[in-house]
Length: 207
Image (cartoon, rainbow, N blue to C red; front, side, top):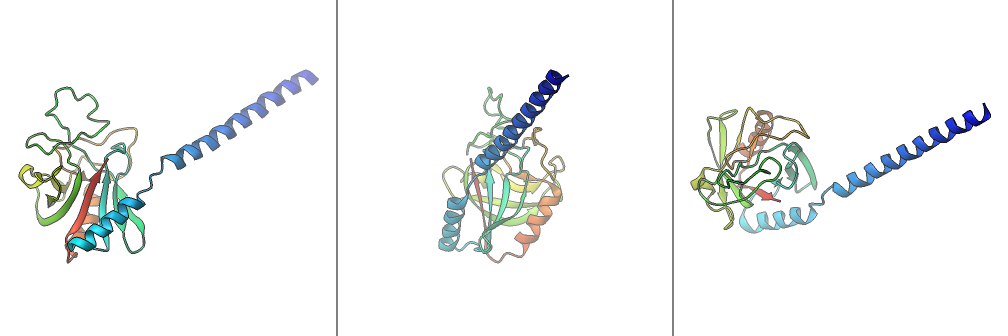
């Protein structure tokens, strides 16, 4: 009986110890995975100040993040906080025949009909009608060689009924033809901000 008690005690204690180690490990890994965008935010603010853009906020899209997780961020320069975040699609990039990882990782191109996402800074332009989602789109004007064909490619910011309004990881968001498409609910949030902005707003897609 004494030996049985000892065995049970060792097993329980060992399980608790393993569980505690696992818990601490998960916390550490989570902290390591949290990205620091402070340098991006500072660069974005400087760009906005130097080029006559809205200096209250900007949009940052990190395509290195899984498409089932929030990766579209609204950053407030004044409070220095992310005020909103949600899912966003990346391009199917079907120009490339061997693209088995298209769901997992965004590929980038500025070529017409590539259906790829494009990296770099964009000026969010005119509000217009869209046949998708809530029927609102914003033209995107690429400001760098990596994205300056955006208007010609009709790469725009719009919503899509197929995009969820909350994280769906480990599932993936649907693929677009290069547009950063968001949920209908999130587009309403963005639209309300953009409609009243007196200056153009910066959208920056990174990886």
